[in-house]
Image (cartoon, rainbow, N blue to C red; front, side, top):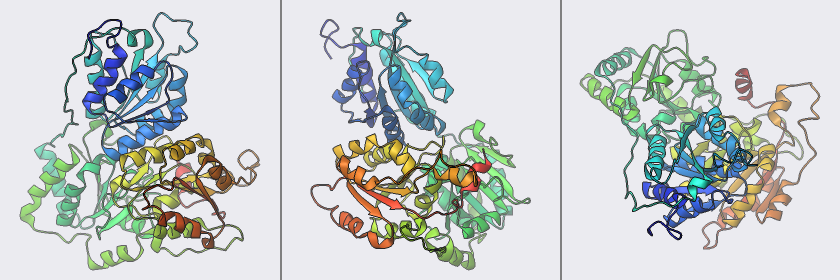
Length: 556
């Protein structure tokens, strides 16, 4: 870069360029005066940038991109109001331990009366993000590198503050070159490995449940399960990890089918691999019987036993732990365990929700959400990446849409906020560009995030949006029963027409006979010019409260 001076690089130039050189994958944001130079420095360094219509949408895009690509994402925002607009998405990322950099401008220390001035560091810390700061021209390279290293090695969302007076100061920079920063791979203690091996030896019906911390360890965990006769399951965030395995039960917890729940509850050993074994994944403990041995493997010692008591905690990388235990057990030969022919046949016949018959009365002018989702599962291409907004509807796309692998499902539910889905789906689309992005959302969450539909149209994303439209905040309607519902119910909204007004294809669905236009849209996907987003305004029948809803509210 040029020598420092009037036309030389500033700290903002250097900060953006260092992040680019460190290898961030994609940046999202809304550009204002405070982060204008920072954002352009990222772009000049070769980092793709997507301009969102709202900082909240941009935060969800960055979060989803990092989850689904395995690379660090950047969210770029203006000081003060830009950061506050993004905070719900940042909270979701922080609670999910998403490796992400929030590159935010900040008010100068001397500007005590600035309209933009807030206590940004306290705000970020309050939602669980890690704060870091660029302190000046002499330290900008080390400051940015430190923030990036924290994001990668600790799997944290880092808010990197750059005061605008410091950002505009002259800096000298030759470039740090390409640095390799990898998360630590902690090998477990030999004694812990031996104790886990003993627990598996003693089990007749072992079940392995893999969570977010085991997404990179799928082959090793699956190989150990095959050798020891363990059935496989995942938490919701790791859905798809064992797709295609005949002894995979799918999602453990509130989204479990009756067959899956019964088989997990029948286990005499449950091993959580990078999995919190929390109330969602274990149905408030009801999937663990009184005589079940519970083991938790996690690289983070603070995670072990955080949600429930465990009989054995193993601190170590999931892949290394599974490989070491398999080595210890190799002389024992292959065990049958829970993997009998009868169990395999049960899993094949009824562990998927798609195989559970749809029952219930037909409501004129309304489509059953289960039947709709099963039909769309057959119509939409199998190579997909499914993103889920939050709400009463969310079980249907989570359980009735199949996914190709763990990078085909993006579940941003740590903060349980509605309205994150549209941004999530756009970020996921950039992370997996060879797959069809699919979003399951409710009418409330979709309308809350509607500004980002223009972003999807502008980008010509072939995004399929399924809006489960019950004209209400359905979770509250079903939870509060006979109470006055006027605060959470709304007049009918023509969401398909709103979608067409944004430039998307809008389809109203009141029954399965209304899906021909969806089929036509899918048939147009291979064309040289992408068809842009499709919004399916599905007028869904009342489900009486989805089957997982009681699980959700039991934790409130």
